[in-house]
Image (tube, rainbow, N blue to C red; front, side, top):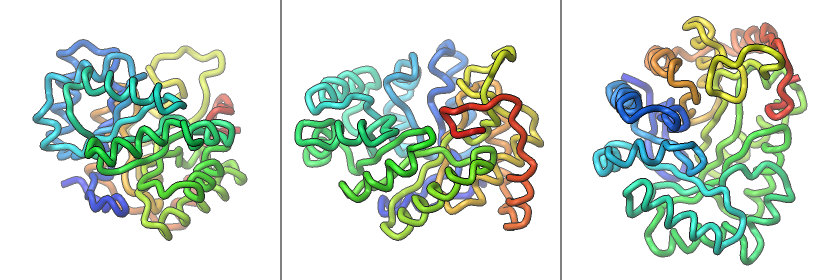
Length: 289
């Protein structure tokens, strides 16, 4: 049985791996059905989805309201103003065939300029607060990736009492000392505030460079079961709560199998893994040097 962890103050006990719906956005309905059923078979009880994930919302719509009964529903808006966010929210509800969410998040808030935009009086955050007031979402979160995201989310928590954060944590990124220090600071801040921690980019090892892009992920992922075990077990050994599955459908089974067998790694083993990481190509968008 896959381990579950309390997602901060939400009191939701999420499986350590949640279903990242990006992976089904470009699949046929039949393939998407396989991915969704596979996740349910492993006991996954949390789904992460966004309107920019191609046709992922259309793929999950036939599964509603079954998924609504079995999975904690986390969604996002990339919009920056209140009015644009509301239009986006209404469109999302139609696309997904849902009337409410468990968690609704500001999507891809990666720097202070964007944070300023979404937190001003007519910013997108205001729409999420109104959603909560109207009973359309229980909780409000913030997400992002990139070299400055951890620092940005620390500032975000100072401006608003977000219930969850979502940002990258993986062993390859932790080779970057500057990113690691701020990421660990954000994790501690979240623990102190009882904020739920979702971590992304679980099996990223670097960028593509001139290599053949044979996966749907915008980063180059680990592919073998042993590599995925090492990367995922490292991530889940950190003080985090849940991690959305990677965006490559062909790797979903390996990720779910790995999460189901998860064993917490010692501090020594964690450091050994960080020191052993090798990325063939840097990926500045993930602070991978």
